[in-house]
Image (cartoon, rainbow, N blue to C red; front, side, top):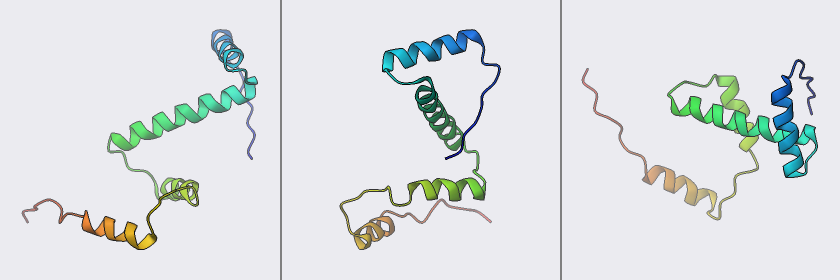
Length: 95
């Protein structure tokens, strides 16, 4: 795992992190990991929903993170059939 150092944390921000860590009974480090994970999920979700395109490298990393994690009771063939049966022809285009 990668490690980082965060410098120059404002006192009021640190106090809030400390309070959250006390409430959740987590170490400051673990609390920061939770905050970073939640924050990045929101930011990535907002960027995706805003129509911004992810770089190819970012897409691959997201797929790698999902690899082996996805759980579904359907067989692979059932999933593929569901995908194909729910596809549309797309929007009309005038050329």
